[in-house]
Image 1 (cartoon, rainbow, N blue to C red):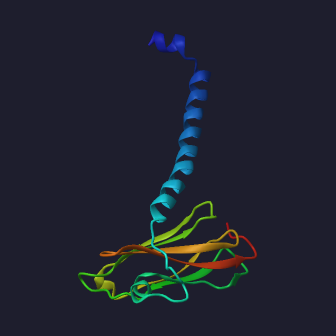
Image 2: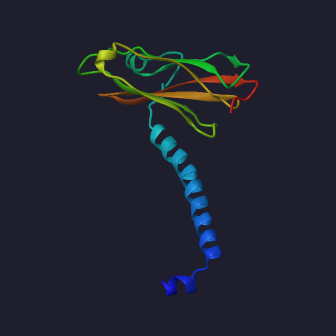
Image 3: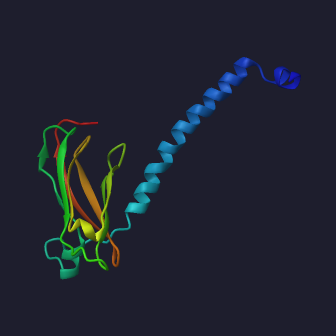
Amino acid sequence: MNIIKDSLSRRAFLKTAALIGLISSIIPDMLIPKRVLADAESGKKAADPKKLTPEEAMHIPKVDLPIIAEDGSLVPIIVSVNHPMEPDHYIKSIYILDDLSAIPSKGLYRFTPANGEAYISTRIKLAETTTVRAIAECNKHGKCEGSSDIKVTVGGC
């Protein structure tokens, strides 16, 4: 006990504890978004978004956003995938991302064949004009990506 008292004062202990607390709160914020984005960027994109092949049309998510959002705090979004939901071939998940946001992940939604269709209607926060991406994961064909641009006039974050 005397060794601890002699080598570490109360003031030094509090400074060290505060420094450890600060570092532990900053480091995850720096690491997590990069890991999330790296994992999500593996989606296949359409070669020509205007002319989709039948397989692309079935797997690439359609992202519906307003052209302009006057208030970025509540932006309506609809993501749908025109894919059969059969027991052996279905959409497992849809991931919504905004790469320019401080928190890029806007939602991860999981599906089973019992859902009947891969469809999401929700509201998200957007801070600035951006491209919102949706990544749909098929249990057989992997990840496919769709996106939509939106102009935000007043930030929501």
